[in-house]
Length: 152
Image (cartoon, rainbow, N blue to C red; front, side):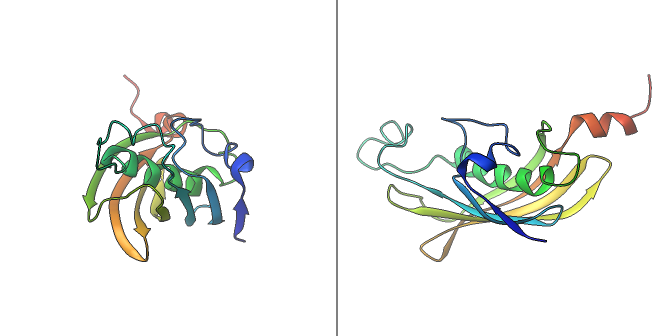
C-alpha cells in the first residue's frame, strides 16, 4: 500500500543528511516498487555560487544523487531494510536541461528488478513538466549481497 514520507520520516530510509540529502519529500512510495517526490531548489543551495557564478545550475552529479536517493527509498522501505546502507554499482545518466534556482525537481524512481541485494532501477527528474534528467541505476545493499558471494 503506497504511503508518503515527510522530511523527518524520510531520514529513516535515507542515510544522507544535509548538505548531501538531495530530496525533500517523498510524496508516494510503494515499497519494493517505486518512489515519487521532489527537491525544491532555492538560491540558498550551497552549490549555486560555485556552479556557476552568473549562471547557477544544479551539478549533474547531484542530479544523479537525487535520483539514486529516491530509488534507495523505494528499496529501503521494504520490510527489514529500514536504515540499511546502500552502494551504487553502476549508472547511466542523461542530462536534458539545466536545473535552476527556483525549480522544483520532481523525481519518479522505479525498481525494475530486486534480487539478492541488487536493485536495477531507473528514475526520471522533471522540472516545469519537462524531463530534465534520467538515469538507469544499479544499487546494492552490501549486507544482503555478501550472503550470495562465493566464499574465498
